[in-house]
Amino acid sequence: MEGTKKKVVVAYSGGLDTSYTVMYLAKELGYEVYAACADTGGFSPAQLKANEENAYKLGAKHYVTLDVTQEYYAKSLKYMIYGNVLRNGTYPISVSSERIFQAIAIARYANEVGADAIAHGSTGAGNDQVRFELAIKAFAPDMKIIAPWRIWNLKSREEEIEYAEAHNIPLKINRETNYSKDKNLWHLSHEGLDLENPANEPQYNKPGFLEMGVSPEQAPDEPTYITLHFEKGVPTQLDGKTLSGAEMVAALNELGGKNGIGLADIVENRLVGMKSRGVYETPGGTILYHAHNKLEELCLDRDTYHYKQQVALKFAELVYYGQWYTPLRQALSAFVDSTQETVTGDVKLKLYKGNIIDAGVTSPYSLYDEEIATFDEDEVYNQADSAGFINLFGLPIKVQAKKGLTYDK
Image 1: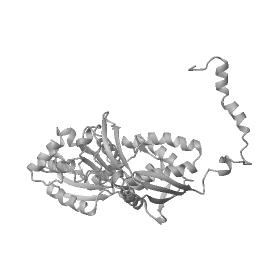
Image 2: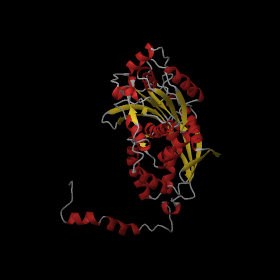
Image 3: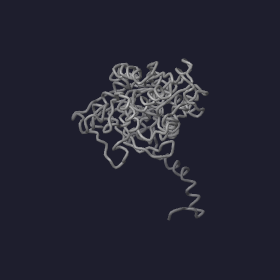
Image 4: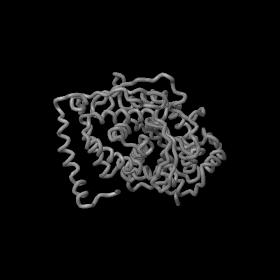
């Protein structure tokens, strides 16, 4: 029987799914539950205290907060910025990059306490189950995994709410506002309810919907100027003030949020085969991606810059699919690392009503030479040289034409 292994670590966020998991394992199956909240910067001290109190009310015998914020930034988010890694080419990778490092922390803790199993609240129709379990396999390959949505025949979140109400468990949700949300240092995601229909406009101006900022319509009428300094691809200063990685993201979240920056509404292709719709708030991450890319435009040679764009697509796919601990991801990280040696300089931006407007970029490693690029008279670029270049560059086309192999005429 499932209850024969008594000690289980539950990846506990305090939300509906993980609360239900703690309750059911403790009350129905008789497990000794270790509730572990892997914090990647999305919880306030008050929320963490409430999580601890609620975990014990739900039936947990032990509770712990695992702070992985710094590790998450240093080992994951840094590379998302380095590589300009965007999902669907539109939003900074968030949930997927977070889940991997939460699962790693959970697996380490499970090994430490000698757990018989790890449980998570991911649904059987989503991507998170894959991300959690691939990371667990890397750190606890023989650990039993309990996934309630797959093995307990759950039909809907409504069923979980009814169970909680029947056991007098106070959950801060209701049937009308029960969006599936996830928050960390990097972002806040929204899924479910009216968002499940892509024809519905997200209610950005509805009080309480946005949590990290405001809609562009509600942003100030005056722009906000900021200057970011990068050292070898790493954002180190904001308006002359030195900040750690996590501090930088937090500061830019505040500035970006106030100016309506970083809202993304996308229909994704899930790993499990279906399409899903989500709305994301990533104000700080959106600013960092924009600024970093602007600096790379100046400092990287053409071929490296273009190849990085191709690598970003594959990198995003590997992270999204939870394939962090794979030889290919490690190789791509090494490549991205090697491209950042000269990505140093200052990027000035204007934030205005949801827009990020370039306001100047400088670097000691700039490959832009005004004397070469000028349309005015110069002594560096001989425009007559271009004739020979065009003749050689166009030689294959000329040969095909002479052979009658031209197309689309």
